[in-house]
Length: 370
Image (cartoon, rainbow, N blue to C red; front, side, top):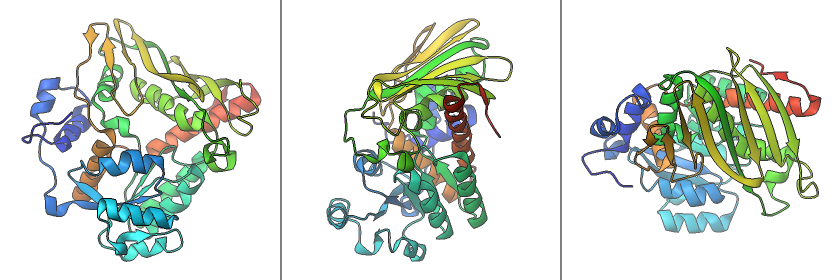
């Protein structure tokens, strides 16, 4: 969906940051406001040119108003050539993994977006911060909560902003679910179920199936969305979790989980159910409250996101999640405003993930540390 020229995505996001859906749709649209001047756009370098960079982030950076695709980091010379031609990237803004640290001397690049296998997130987030660049790190943030803490500390020491690629925090339907749950619009939530997954039929040698590289399987890749969904809908941090798993293709998923089920316990006694899978096409969030219900389905894909409440369908604009996410971070960097999705947000999710894996090992309910 395209907004008229008198509005900007920037204003929508800033309105969401103030109220997370407290305004009606019409007043939200009317409140869409200013963005950075064109000559003040911030330069973004994508580190890793795989599917997500190629299919989502680079195209989104053609729609952003506060930032632009300024540079790339790749270990594949052919990609360096094709991307330079396609996106008019100057040679001085193209790096590989050997000379990455030289990015510190490049004033064209303000933000580095880490789009690498999970086991590389910590290293390149820390190196980018030490090079004086602000960092967007793709989800899941790291292999475990301990690595997340190191990343946060490094960015704070370097006085650089860190955000995690949680695009749905800038998506209108998701923002409305945050409001409905956190503001108790239908009363307190009494039950919540959500799930995210797809039927993995890809390369059996892909890094996502290697525990040392991915940290885990469907839970790390898909489940992180469902964990987020429960947390931002309830508006609290879970204190304990009980989990189980199943594998219908153990010969394929030899190192990582295929399908994981969990029950999160929140302060006050609410227990929510979640699941992730590399063997099922799932993608929903369903909440029952004291005086009504609300849900999203599809809830976690790139779009369209759709939702309804017990009062009827939700009707919000469809936006480019990645463009909205990157525009918001660039605005925060440029204006020194607080970032809505900090590294701590990724850390909280990884504390839950760590506890789920402990529960899978122990067969017991595990406390969520931190």
